[in-house]
Amino acid sequence: MWDDLTPFLVGAGPTSTVLDPDGTPNNILDTAVGGSVQVDWSFSGSATGFLVVVNFIVDLYADPVGPGMNIQVGENQVLGSAPLPSPPAAPNSYSTSFPIAPGMAPGAYRLTTLVTTVLTGTTTTLPIAGFVDGPIIQVRPGP
Image (cartoon, rainbow, N blue to C red; front, side, top):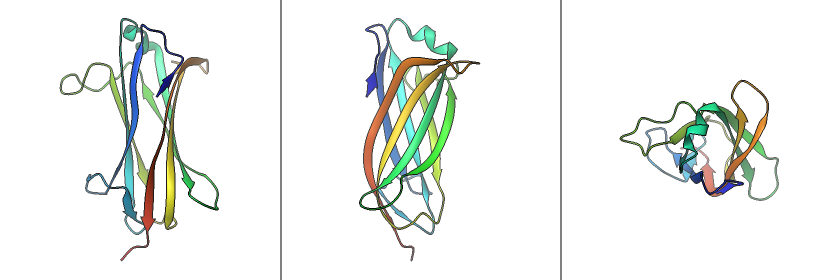
């Protein structure tokens, strides 16, 4: 879900997909092997040319379901001037991936992904932000 976009810039996503180490989507990971989370989003509209001066800051958090401290899984930067190749991806599509290292404590976690923006080469924040709350994953003890 994107907030504060004009009618000239329409955001789709972001979406979060949890992957086994072999790339298979799966919301259950083994603590012994970990996995990754792929985050995807895209834009359409007449103002997409503006994206070349934007850096996307993508943060992924794992919040335990029940007691425990929130975990920042990672933070990645994606250049607005470097969308995925089109085709096969839709125009103005972006993606980043976060490894989930082996050894994460067993339990259930709600993943939260935040995508914020800054003007390239500065720390000036822009009013373009998106988020996705979920999915819930299970990290189970390894075999």
